[in-house]
Image (tube, rainbow, N blue to C red; front, side, top):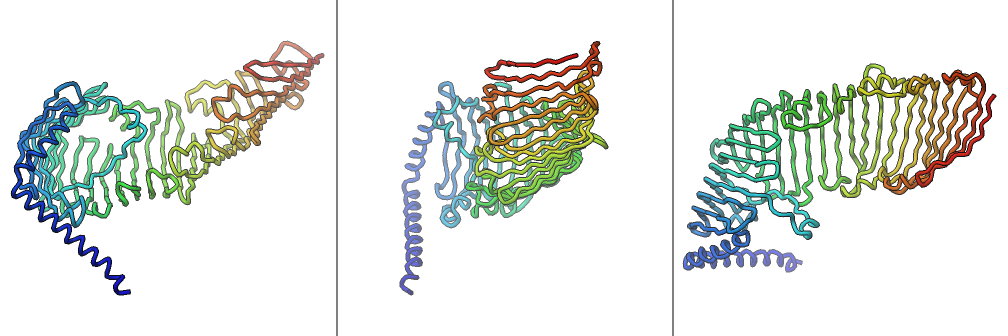
Length: 530
């Protein structure tokens, strides 16, 4: 038993000795063949640059094993390509091979110092088909230095709508004293141009803190924190505390299993945040406006795996409008747990009119499966004035009346009509259509077994009524709705024609069978009048 337990220890000891021997060989190689190393690496770097249609030149110096300096780097385009300009005054690197052996990539870099860099690019040609099929996932760089100094960094990218520009970037992250962040200009075409961005930085133990970051009078961050001290353990922390258009905003996030599952634990909170001011500031045309009087979100899970999501969201939007439609006050409660999500939405148009919606669904394993999940939905309202709705929405609606009852239940896959099961029950009292009195109107909708049945009854008064019943199939997809057939029956039961504002005195009885197929309507009627 003891012999077995000693094997891993011996193996680990041998691996350390092998690693140390290789390191010694590299040191000896560097001492006696340093010029060969620089010329050899230059050959491969210049060759790689030529593949990007660049004629690259630079000067290199350093000890190879702890420091490397690149100066006077120039990349001159030899033909049309994505890079228009590439210049770096100096690039100083200090690194530790011992740190690499002990901690992996996070322990390699000790210092990165870049000065007077000018980069100008034009978006590349469309990716080859094989690249499009395998999109690259963004990964947070494992190589993050103990000391970072950037001076006068400039970047321009040319696009069809204008040039995106970052100019005059100065950033110093120092472990033993305060640093600085300054940006002369950030210009995003069609969005906004920011100038004179500034803040103070500290970077003790690889924990970046930026304080008093001002991005114009509209955005200010009292504190921004990016904690990269645990990169070797695949962990990352982020938090901010500030104001956005005079509204407080607080956010904290922790990422574990970094660059793999990226499991996220996030909390965010804000209040009194004007959506209209955001859209105007970013030069965006968004139809939804209002004030976020309450916004509280907590989330845990893997961002790309919905079935792992747990958390809550509580939102209150007052003065809500959609494309000039007044929606009043909207509250939304979202709960996620055990691979399910429940959403509760209440829209209060005014003191008397409101709509309640509750929806439940499963959470799929991937985003591509969202269109296959089953949705359970319930909607309910009462004493809802259609005329008031039309006034709120700034619409001229020919149908008026009061929704004394609206109850909807639904189950199925939203993108697959043949799976729909549910019912709707509607009672509209005092109904009119284009000033024509329809009395009390009831509508019943039933969906089951890939079929839908609709029953409508309009009671003009105590003696006169109109009955309509229609049946149809439910297609597999929305694109097949124009191919389905429908049949039904219309019955006008002995109305007083005067009640219909017709200049005729008498009774009428009408029975009509109708069928809609191949985009054609056919009818067969029996009329009896006196």
